[in-house]
Amino acid sequence: QSVLTQPPSVSGAPGQRVTISCTGSSSNIGAGYDVHWYHQLPGTAPKLLIYNNNNRPSGVPDRFSGSKSGTSASLAITGLQAEDEADYYCQSYDTSLSGYVFGPGTKVTVL
Amino acid sequence: QLQLQESGPRLVKTSETLSLTCTVSGGSISTSFYYWGWIRQPPGKGLEWIGSIYYSGSTYYNPSLKSRVTISVDTSKNQFSLRLSSVTAADTAVYYCAPERTTGRWFDPWGQGTLVTVSS
Image (cartoon, rainbow over all chains, first blue to last red):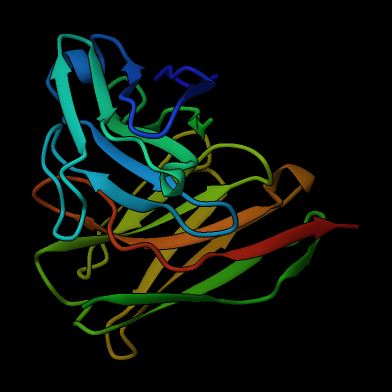
């Protein structure tokens, strides 16, 4: 049972916009800790997508954007492409657990 | 460009100790920019942070694993290592190593990962 919750799956047609929520609590996101996002293609290692809530590493398309408010964060993918089919994970720090926590992951399907 | 590579036995017997090493290339492990972390992923499941180490040897661990985990660093070899004792089938997972940015606490880039199976 993760302290961060994500929807198990989201889907959209090519070109559409989808969002993935990451809901935490006052001991992690709500405490001011930053949220980071990773995506993971089947059989590969996770790759950083968004760091510090809304920053994209070099090379990540601007179709990906992040936001944070209160005890939640969101990842938005605009102009959905077939190559975006992957699992997406949020990550933060939890002061009650004294460690890093990941969300359970959301599978994005492109219809 | 940092690159990390995990290595170690792929099969470990129940109740024994899992040992993995992460070799860092493309940069020095003795840097103030990073901690060095281990994360695992059981087959078909999500990610779990195991613990992290600074080049000075300072460590911090996931409390749920702390009693069984030791992470060490060898700066002369640009490597850091994981030991997980008293393993069970629940420890079967892909184990990843990754640098953890000290100023932001995200992990990037990740090693390719290595599947370790625990079996009797």
